[in-house]
Image (cartoon, rainbow, N blue to C red):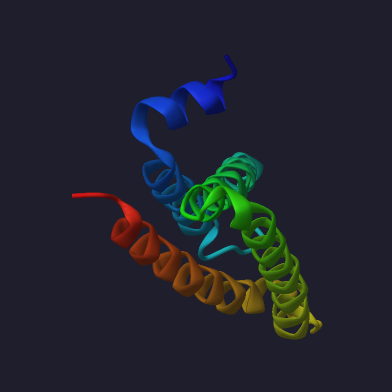
Length: 133
């Protein structure tokens, strides 16, 4: 059994969703305040954490959506979830592209990370709501 399946079976998909969002948050925090002297190791850690969190979130979200529907509606739920995921990716590229499209890229990185942090905090809140008490 893969590590993801074992962890989601043991802890549940909502916990995995929150774990992914918290990992994203830690990655964003590691990247705050960049300048010309920011060590590569800090950038690498932040980027790796964001990548790892990005691997957890879509799988957990898809599992939550599909498992919350009846068997005959699972295909519809999966299609809606995938459409929303693709739309979110499109919107995020447009938002981050417009924020970072400047000659002062490093200074604007803080704004982009603040937007990302706000979105991640909303994700953490929604994941905590999904965790059964």
